[in-house]
Length: 167
Image (tube, rainbow, N blue to C red):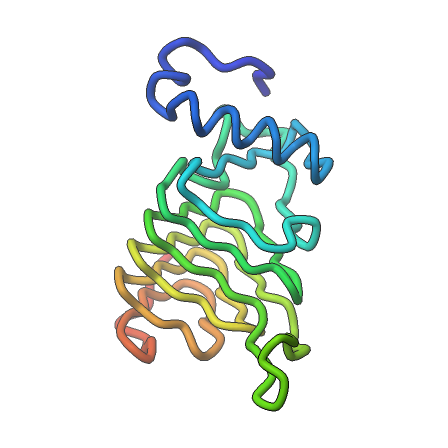
């Protein structure tokens, strides 16, 4: 895996994005071998609870996250992201709700698991405790309220399976 970005890659992802990712790696001790790229317009809460699978065999610099703008990650209860996950602009991955009795407190839930080769379309919202299965595609604007099995295309609000994918 390459350790340095080429001029073309820097131009494509933007200097602000590179600076934000440098700061994230230093503050939260994200391993530089992990393809962790977040656009500078993104917001991350509890980054230390995000686990991104290492990509030693990957030929690209950043194959887990596209440098999409407007990404929001709330990892209070944890977020696990496997390899080759593509996340489009405006996606929200929210691992915790607020407590009804004390809105300053978050509720406990299972972590969010996004398995290998998943594609999350523009403005998808993934809610707490969800697992999205391997090789699945979640359509733009979907709100994922229940677990998604392997090898499906799903979409809508709430998300429903549209069709199975032959892999």
